[in-house]
Image (tube, rainbow, N blue to C red; front, side, top):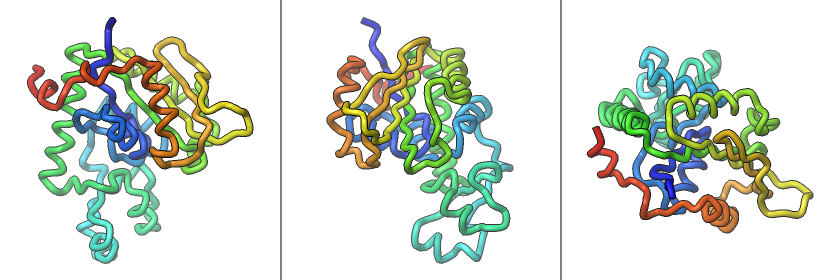
Length: 233
């Protein structure tokens, strides 16, 4: 059987990466692990173009943010994502990279390596499950997302054009319907699943997530490790 070799988060917050890590499926860091993106088109833009460092604002260069930086750490703000030029504090709390300062060479090198891993996965045609977990009650930008959503289909189309992959989208939203999780759509390299729970906690969703990934027949022993990816050309 042709097994998945990589499971990779494509955002739009850190929930996806946290869940994959807690399940033992995250074998190396990648581009979108800790990003806060305002829409799915941002994902496509970074996949296509990488980072444009002219678009960034570094919070360590802003004296007004000294106390916030001391409390939460330096962040990187993007001029086109979650940014209000008239409200720098809002922009700080909604920074697209809340855990990384790309004015720091170590953080910059980290993302360079992440983009290089994506390039290797693409060039070596490695079978990949791209994962996007969305909490509509938490992320109001995604209240009406479904498998017919234009942006989701654009993302799916971009991914399957460039990678050997499937896009898994899980929507975490409590309803009055009596089921724990349900496959809403499974066709054309898009698997769309509703998990009937709005909680952000991995442990509140652990049972359902394990059932889903067992259904997908993910074999941890088949997943490429950090060293495996680094050795690829």
